[in-house]
Image (cartoon, rainbow, N blue to C red; front, side):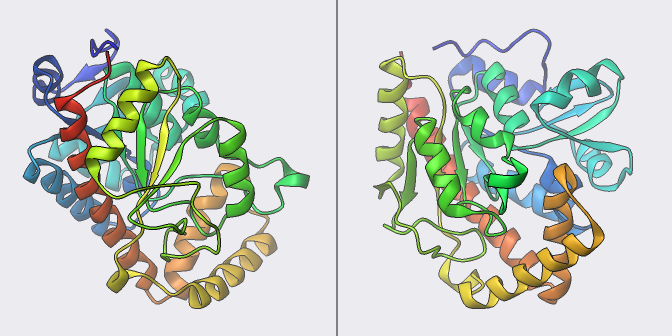
Length: 310
């Protein structure tokens, strides 16, 4: 597998040198900064996550579109711009040509970050929660592009499971249909973002970064395209119990329906409303789980860099 970055990408020197040297690099999304958390917690979180990754000997590569340029690796000033500018679009894969052609700013979703990370030759990506099949999808057909991208881009995505605002059962079925390995870390239960339990058994389990890196290497050596979903439960002391968060989510869904919010605006609205209803507890949990994922993702990246796919 090549690690030569696509020529249209703008890489920082730190990221470019690490990729050229075969050192571990971890991709990070940017919608969590611009659309997932309020300021200034979003900048603090992004900076802390990058520091965690560096602390494990890996290089962080936060991805975004800035001034029409797909950027892999950002400066502190770039993070501040994403966190504060009202002109940053939420950019999934379908939006990349539009945002880039117009010279705009775009915060990349999980799907878009996966695509650009793969083009850069980055094989590990850390995020908060994976998108999935929305509740009511049999009627609305509202399914996140994250799931389709996992069948296309050769990137291992470390998340805290599927956001509990979604239909977790249908999401797992969709991932199975797409041939995406779903691997829970250190547990037999598939985690539900804010909570460690979802009521659904994880299809696979791994108990070490070495084991996950081996699965990545074997999958791609066999020529099986697409990514892997690594589901890492939020630390026990930081979770919101499933019973409590379920009631909060139901209230947020009711409020969203009353306002007629749909499509790409649904998830940002729901996450913001859940922060309000939970009195800020969901934001604390969100930050804690992203940091936890950064620790695991950096370890996986280091193991994979030591023994990459052919």
